[in-house]
Amino acid sequence: MLSRRNLLSSAVGATALGLAPKAFAQAPAWPQKPVTIICPFAAGGNTDGIARMAAQRMTEAYGMAFNVENRPGAGGALAADFVAKSPPDGYTLFIAALPVMAIVPAMSKVRYDSQKDFAPISNIATNPFALVISKDLPVKTVAEFVAYVKARPDQLSYGSAGVGSLNHLSMALFLKRAGLQMAHVPYRGNAPALADIVAGHVPAMFSNLSDALPQINGGSVRLLAVSSAERSALAPDAPTVAEAGYPGFNVLTWNGLMAPAGTPIAIINKIADTMSAAIKDEPFRKQLSDYGVDPVAARPAEFAATLASDMVIWKEAVDIAGVKQQ
Image (spheres, one colour):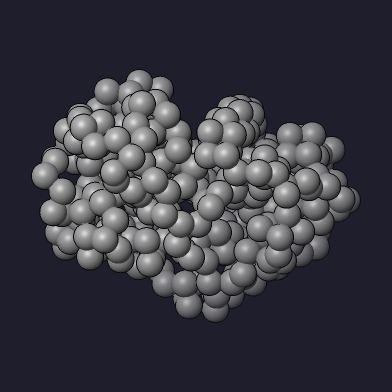
């Protein structure tokens, strides 16, 4: 397993391994100097780690350094604005994260347009949410959970990582679909919320699946379903919320590469080809899986469609949750 510490110390000056397809022969001579991948969060987190995996793979493919530069602040908006205003020459890329592209703009006034100012290249990894409950709750399926909550209107609560967090908004969407009423108990992060599920102080939450796996596997919480459209390789036996009776329910977070709008399509396709090949490579897939995310190979058009759909979904979630724009 590749640890965050190893990722941070990974050298990105590796010699090219000759992985670029022959089809690249007609592409412009790129890269001719080091490429910077801007990360919207601090070093050591999931987004940073995925950025470094991609940087290492592209360094090997092109024989040129791909360096990760962390620019945290304003929920990722500072980094996104920087990339949006960078020259569209292929030498500044962005490891985009769903919250930065779809949720922050729905809750705050930002200086970038997620769809107009960026060119999607390749979605790399997704991470669904897990509907987890206290092991003491007398239910074992989503249907039983819904019936249990409906029989106790306004008596039960759910935890989240904070107001406007992904798991807060995910639960708001689910409660709306299921016709349920539960009080929201915001915490300062996913970990303390999950700890109170384990302790039985709060009965339920949508947790990041990767964060909850130790508790799920250890039996200290019960996993009812995952929020993605398809079952997750991280918990293949768990049904999806859609399978459990709510067709079309599909909420998850993702990380993928983008560039400033106007970046030459030849460069966009070249990077997309490299990342598509990487995702098909079993060692790289395992690297991502070991990191707690599901590998995904989405090329520019598909990635753009995902972004467009998610902007609608998460704007609805923000409205349902009653989060006021700042």
